[in-house]
Image (cartoon, rainbow, N blue to C red):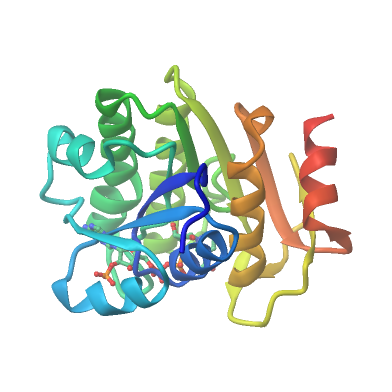
Length: 224
Ligand SMILES: NC(=O)c1ccc[n+]([C@@H]2O[C@H](COP(=O)([O-])OP(=O)(O)OC[C@H]3O[C@@H](n4cnc5c(N)ncnc54)[C@H](OP(=O)(O)O)[C@@H]3O)[C@@H](O)[C@H]2O)c1
C-alpha cells in the first residue's frame, strides 16, 4: 500500500540486481517504484517487488517513448547496464546511450531529478593495459556522466565500487573520492533511497564502498 505523498521513482534497468533491491526499499517506505524492463517475463518479479512495470527496451526506444514511460515520476534512476556477458558495442548502446536517452526522456517529461548509477573508475580515462571490454565500460560510464553533467537536470552521480550480493551492512564510505573497494548491492540501494530523498544532493558526484558511517549520516556529511 502506498503512503499518500510517497515519491514516484522510475528505474531504468528495473529487473537488475540493484534495481530490484531499490524497488523493495522504496516500497517499504511508501514510495512508488516504476520498473522499466525490457522482457515481459520480468513483469511478475518486479510486481512482487512492489513496482509498477513498464516494458521498454532502451536500445530501441526513442525519447518520446521514455517520456511517456516516466510521465508523472518525481525522479528517475539509471540502474541499467549491458552486464558482464556483453561486449564493447553494448557498453556504448546501454551504459552510455541508454543513460543519455533516459535524460532526454526526463527533460521531455519534465522530470528534473536524475540519479545515475555510474562506477568507480569513471572519473578518468581507463589506465593503459585495462582489459578492452572493461575499458569500453569505463569509457561509456564516463561519457554518460559528462552528458548528464552538461544538463540542467538535478542530477546526482553515484560511483559504487565492485558490487557484491552480501547482506546490507547499513554503513558505508560515501565521499567525492574513496579508496577502491567493494560494496553490497543492498547498501547501494539504501544510499540511492537516501539520495532520492535529499534534493540537496543534486550536482554531487559521490564514490561509494563499504565503510563504517551509517547511510543517513554519510549522505548528510556529503552535503557539507
Ligand atoms: N558489477 C559491478 O561490480 C558494478 C560496479 C559499479 C557499478 N555497476 C553498475 O551498477 C548498475 C547496477 O548493476 P547490477 O549488478 O544491478 O546490474 P544488472 O543486474 O546486470 O542489471 C542490469 C539491468 O539492465 C537491463 N538492461 C540491459 N539492457 C537494457 C536495455 N536495452 N533496455 C532496458 N534495460 C536493459 C538488464 O535487463 P535484462 O535482464 O533484460 O538483460 C538488467 O535488468 C549498472 O549500471 C552497473 O553498470 C556495477
